Length: 120
Image 1 (spheres, one colour):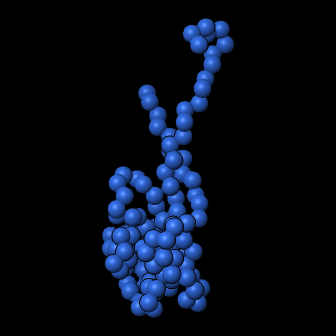
Image 2 (cartoon, rainbow, N blue to C red):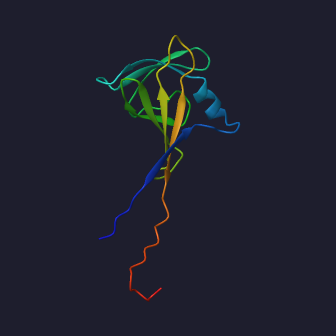
């Protein structure tokens, strides 16, 4: 039986000059409602929007995957497969929300040696 293990590395989101990344880092999560699966987001221009699971954040490619009590889970719709997930944390008093990225990393298999085995 083959087992596949995926390790998720959690690191701060650091895009290099992308327009969408700048817009995401300037957004503020004002209110989260996990029961309804909705959140109120303040965009970079100050415009408020209500987003639900499965909807994108304005014109950005980021789609809401899950609404928790303290953060949103977003997925970049341009990426295929698992790709990377983004946490957009709730903010205090309208300040920009903290953004974190979770990337999929497939570890290299470990080398095993069996005592007495001369096949190596």
